[in-house]
Image 1 (cartoon, rainbow, N blue to C red):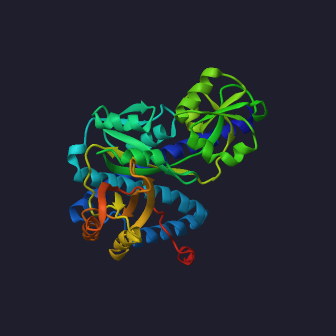
Image 2: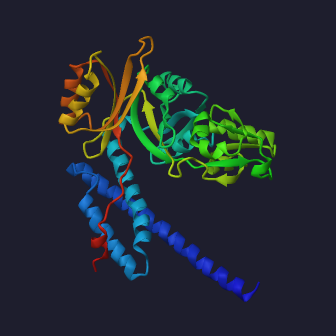
Image 3: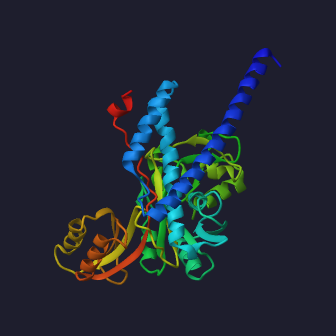
Amino acid sequence: MTDYQAQLNGIRQQISHLDGELLALLAKRQGLTNEVAETKIKAHMQVRDAAREEALLIKLIQQGQALGLTPQYVTALFHVIIEDSVLNQQMLLAQRANPDNAQPLNRVAFLGDKGSYSYLATQKYFARRPGELHEIGCQSFSEIIDTVESGEADYAVLPIENTSSGSINEVYDVLQHTSLSIIGELTHPVEHALLVATDTDISQLKTLYAHPQVFAQCSLYLSSLGLEHKVMDASSAAMAKVAELKDPSVAAIASAAGGSLYGLQAIKSNIANQKENHSRFIVIARKAVSVPLQIPAKTTLVMSTVQKPGALVEALLVLRDNQINMTKLESRPITGNPWEEMFYIDVEGNLQDGPMQTALEQLKGMTRYLKVLGCYPSEQISPTRVAAAKALQQ
């Protein structure tokens, strides 16, 4: 071993030691935020305090600058830490409000098998929940719904929309006919890559395997390749097929993280039309949950309006007049009723809150059909904002 190698190894050992200390400190910090959550439960306080978060981040930026760290580095680091703290506090509050939901085993149905985006989203969501995770892969959205309705699974994780390809209509259609309730949501980054099982390159490829939504999300890049597309029921099925074939002329389109579970390697990454590509998932169960008022909540409604000009506008004005923000509006055909639509609406609001209760009463009197599909904690955590001028003050 050369002197340089010995010196490098010594420095790396110090870094590894510091990494361990950082992890221990982060775990200690997380424990303290859990104590904060317990205090907020007793005092009925809101989870987030924007003014305190801003003041904290300003102080940390200034401390970081004194240590030679850039404001961008400190901000990015503590955005992650604050988001984790908020999500953990929300989870504890939700658990206290729904004690009957705590169970030693969470049986969760999702689309595909290990490695699919739904699988990765399931792992992410239930990592914060107590209890062992039992995964149940399904081949269709209808099968997922049936698995929960029959009691074979306790929960299901369903993709509902994507920032690139838009809404997933099949999911809206199955929601129209189920008695299950939406109890949660999460967003998960979608990072499509070309995955292969053997040493090869793009010029050798002839056939691609992927879910139809994935093909749609990567259409711009794929149009330049001119390869045959083989549609699969899930990304996991595409990866399994390529792993089975071990053919240098075939590739799957999925995440590199999922591909590693099948022994696949990425030969081209970030091929989606939009580089900031995220999917939103909903979590459903047989029983609705109670969302404490301290937690930012969303409510999903489905309704059909009377057949007259302006009926939908009148319904939406009810939301505006009650100061309720609508985040999503989706229409789907009503089966058996040509040219009639069912409207799915996501709003920011809690069913226990006065404005939401007033709005629902008003909507009941002016719609032909109205149903609450679920009220659930919002896990879309907006980053703490700091004015640049404040951050630079010493």
